[in-house]
Every structure is written in C-alpha cells, then in structure tokens.
Image 1 (tube, rainbow, N blue to C red):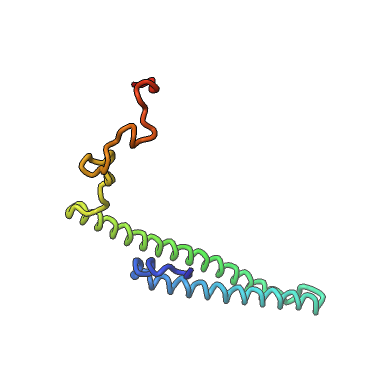
Image 2: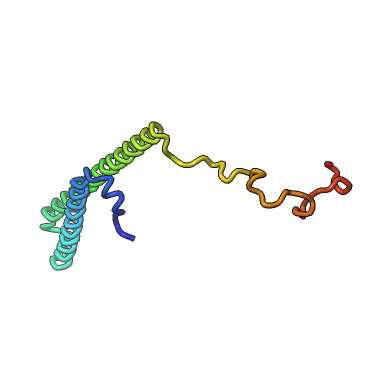
Length: 146
C-alpha cells in the first residue's frame, strides 16, 4: 500500500501546492521539536552544573517561544490539511455530479436488475416443469394447499 493513493493525487491535482506546504510545515514543526529538546537539555545541565536557577531566564523565554511556535505550526498544519481535504472532496463531488448528469442524458448506468428473468420463459426451458422433473412438486393428494 502506498502512503498516498494515486487516484486521490489525480483527483486533487489542484491541491499539490497545499500538500507541499503541509510537508514544509511538518518539517518546521520537527525542527522546533529538536530545538525544544536542546533548550530543555541545556537548561537542565546548567541547573545541575551551577547548582541553581540563575541565568535561566533567556532559556525559559526561548522555550516559551518554541512551544508557542509549535502550537502555531500545528494549527496552521491542521487548517491547511482541512483546506486540502475540502478541495479534493469538492473535486470528487463535481466529477460525480457531472458523471451522473451524463448518465441521465445518455441513458447510461447499471443494467436493469431483472436479468435473467424468473421464471424463465417457456421457450427457453428444455423440459416442462412437472412432478417428474421437479422433486419438490406438491401433488394434490399430499399438498394441503392444493
């Protein structure tokens, strides 16, 4: 199975730019995770080395900025994904409506569900249906419905 279905890519050619933008936002969010980990490691190591919390204000300010940046990128990524999905669904609905309209005009669509006809016409039967040819035949003496 492929990560992105090729049929969806064909249906959503207009969303290719949104897909690339989403990938860029995800990459930026991943970089901010690395920066956040580095800031936390640096802050913890300074506390252990110095034995106190002096000089941590710039690191904490940067950490707050990174967390806010991650939140903003997460919101932007969700918004972009929603817009791309809406665009693809709209394209698919338009194609479906166009196809349904074409089928209504040309009389296309699925075949009628009455084939083969039942019971089969007498002209296509090789032998008539009688008590001799049908084991489930209910004859008058044994059949209460007769």
